[in-house]
Each structure stands twice: as C-alpha cells, then as structure tokens.
Length: 375
Image 1 (cartoon, rainbow, N blue to C red):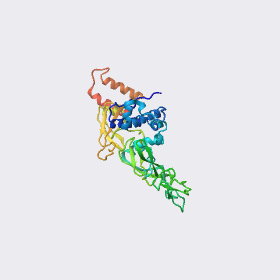
Image 2 (cartoon, one colour; image 1 turned 60 degrees about the horizontal axis):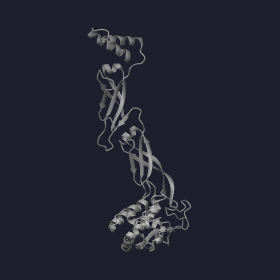
Image 3 (cartoon, rainbow, N blue to C red; image 1 turned 30 degrees about the vertical axis):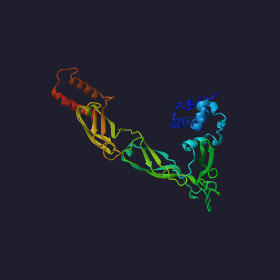
Image 4 (spheres, one colour; image 1 turned 90 degrees about the vertical axis):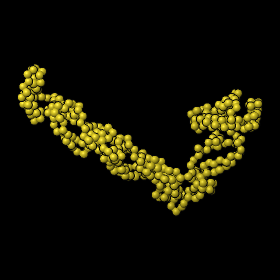
C-alpha cells in the first residue's frame, strides 16, 4: 500500500515551520496514542504513521531529501524499523519521551484516597445542627508493623536495583539523539524498599482495613445534598503520604408538616368555615414547638400568613428564614340536622332566597353557627 504524503499526515503545509510541525505532531500523537484508544484497532497504525512523518520532517537533511524525491528519498535509511519502532522499545516509550512519561508509577509519598459517606437527618436536625458518630470503613497503617510491612524484629532494606529511588534509568540511542529514560523499578515496584519477611497481619502492604467511628459536626442550616468535608479522615496515604479526606453527603428526610424553600418553611393549616368567617387565634406548629397566629374574620381559603423568623437559620449564621402558613378552609362532610338547618338559614340570610335581611339576625345566626361547629 502506498504511503500518504508526510505533510498531509501531520496536517501541515509543505512550507510549515519546525514549530508548526512539532505542534501538529504533539496534538495528533496524543489523540491517536494506542494507550488512549484501547477500543480503536486503527489507532496504533495511525500513531506509527504520524511518528514516521515527524521523524522525517523534523530532520532538516531528511526533510530536504523528502521534498526533492518524495518517499524514495528517505526509504532505506533506517525507517523500516517503524513497525517495531527500533530502539524505542515500544509505543509507550516514544510517548513518554515526548510527553513527560505521564503513565509512570509514582514512587514518592502519595496522599490517600478520599472517602464518601451518606448521612440521613431530620428537617429539625438540619435546621439547628447536630453532632453524630458515623461508621467509616477505611485503610489504616498496620498496627502490627507500624506501616512498614515488615515482620516484627525486621525492617525493609533499601532496594539495590534502584538505590531506594524507586526508579531505574537507562539511555537509548534514538533518531533524536541519546535519550535517558526512567522507569519504575521492577524489583521493588517503585517503593525503593525490599521486604524480605512480610508482616503476617498486612502481608507486607503496611495497611489494613478497619471500621472507625468518626464524629461529624453538622452545622445549622444545611440542606439536602449539602457536602461536609472532614479533613484527614480518608484512606491512609502511600509511602508516608497524608490521609485523604472524608466527604459526608447530607440527606434530609421529608417532613410530614413542613416543606422547605431555601431558608423558608411552608405549612398548611386546616380551619373550619366558622373560623374563617369569624376569625380566630390558632396554635401553629413550628420547629421550636407551637406559636400563636391570629387570622382575621373573612379569611379566604389559600390565604398565606407569614411568621417572621420561624424558618431555618441560614448556614452562614447571619439570618433566619420565615414560616409561611397557608390556611385551608375545610368543608364538613357530615352534618347533623341542626347544622343543615343553620346552613339553610345562613343561605337565606345571605340573600339567596330573600332580599330583606334583618341586620339583627346576623349576630344570632353566627352565634348559632359557632355553637354548632365548634362545640
């Protein structure tokens, strides 16, 4: 199969500068590197094509020959080894050489992983805060060996292959010159230490799994979905690194009485027809017990009353929301004969069947209604 034009492969013009060629190659090499495309069978072939084009166009002499004679000007000059990449030792090595070896294993201290825990609380607990013990399974330094991984009476020794660095270096001759590369030490697996006699408890890892009780302070005003960070209570670090963090996600259980809207609370209060018509003083449930609320006579169903400062404290601690009370007039479903008679009298007094209403009758009627509906 004939080869494509090298300039076309890199997507640059024939007169492109060296910086343009290098920039184009870096971008495409990242895109088509086989390690980044495990499910793309064509990625490796594309990557090889890009690398071959770059090796020719980045060398002034080879580029000059290519510009004069095409592929014939550079074939047979050592580029047939691209199928195996010659001295590069594989695709990973050439990628590491150009892009910093991002796939290498870290050998120094490493912070432990973060942990997530979910905590379910009530609306009242969310409003006023609480402190609670939660159970968290996590990795910890082995108490038997103190985290060294070595059995009692022994200790790890420095790896002779890497002299304790966790990395080994070797030089390679490449078309770009002599390149020194580093790789994770195979003998100590990057730890820099050799454990001849592993600890029987942790089997040489220096870590064990335990479930810890951790006290978590939930501030007043948190809402559903809030996230709390407890520093240093995550997984144990590696090679002397610090612990990760614990993140506690708050779930507020639905409340039977209140709905929350930001820092405000909303509740519905059923009242009778007589209470709506004559007015009344109601006992309203709040987060801190009950409070009195006066409703005027003639209140309509759906009217909203505001109780200032009876909502949820703001999580910042500087303010507090309100409580909104929606009154709902409840229509009675079962009436006694006396109640039916009074309602018919009320209908008549209201003008549905008569135009002449005795002003003095109003008072006696409402008194009868109050007695009938409210005992």
